[in-house]
Image (cartoon, rainbow, N blue to C red):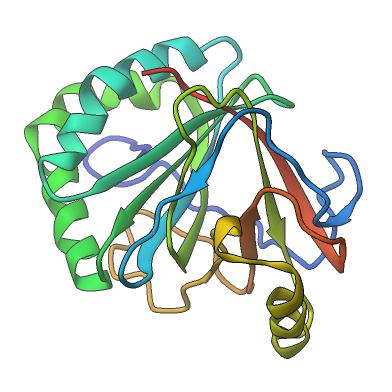
Length: 229
């Protein structure tokens, strides 16, 4: 969420940038060729929204504490200020990683909603407990896309975080191999106007869900289990 030291400042920003290389902590692969276990669907909207994909590194064994708090307080707390809280996931390849997404209709709404939540009573009451579970909460991608929500009963979701080296080449690939069911998201390059919550910069990623023909660019694989509310 928002790690803090004394006062109201975040504990750190993400110092590392994310080069166009394969994440060596996970199996090497190219983009595509994924499946999901169980039913899944993308959530269609009239227009793309501004999305965040957030990946938290947790202290060993603290995931249950954060998830219980998140489901009890932070879902409804964010919804109350106009934030759409999407899927929450455990990383099946890293038991101490929590992945979730949230959405806003536009950047101005995002700024107002984040300000309302992070200065509001829910976060102020529970932030110390939440932050105590986290080693790092700054691995955040700001995206535009249709949203993605797995259907009830889905036991496993595969996501591809792809780093194409040429956007035109990727558009050609996407036109041939990705459809609406893949819920394709792209980096939102607008300035982060709520800087107390850092986002990853200096990269141009594409994210999709589900099976696709392999593509020739580096990627991070996420194998995710939806949190049961």
